[in-house]
Length: 267
Image (cartoon, rainbow, N blue to C red; front, side, top):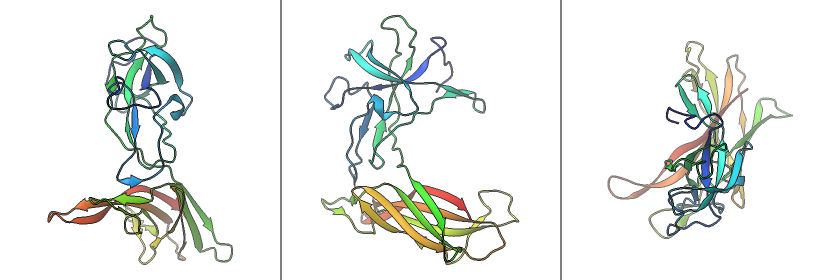
């Protein structure tokens, strides 16, 4: 947040304003409350609008709080305790948001200063609308050693995903060329390089594409990779890339990709 926090005194919280279960662009509360919406270019799990139960970490929840200066009489506010970052000399708050099984929905948070210890109708500051963001889906990666061959590692990645991608036409793509792919590679650390990010090099012919299975919109990627006998420091690099339709300079449509998840596991 910007400097000047605690302007209303001790106990001031960063409040997230949430509205009713159904909000439309024509509603009077639309410009003042937090919103979550489906990414229409992908087929994934359905959504409900943000509510107090959408936020974790046991926040302070207040209902029926007047939003003065707006046509919205009362709102629900989810309060988060600010923390101080000495490096940047600024205050921040972590907001734990549960988007369910939806894949990368669009989220617009409505933020206020919330002072629970205030006079009547003075608890909230004017609303500030945050930029729209797309939270990335949760992922759980598991690596196990083989019983018969300890050099073999079984890698599993699981979490919410999508089942189709839409291009410029009316039809949705559902084949492997447009659905997300997860790969695992064996990397060795170069002892001559001190930088912990730059010292890792992928070993030749060790990259494996995991096999995807989907139940509903929940995906699981599984595969095996062999870790070579090596005296150096090794790790497995697991990377997920999503696929998107994109326009080329010539005006034709092509498929591109971007990394949405990566993790490194020492072996």
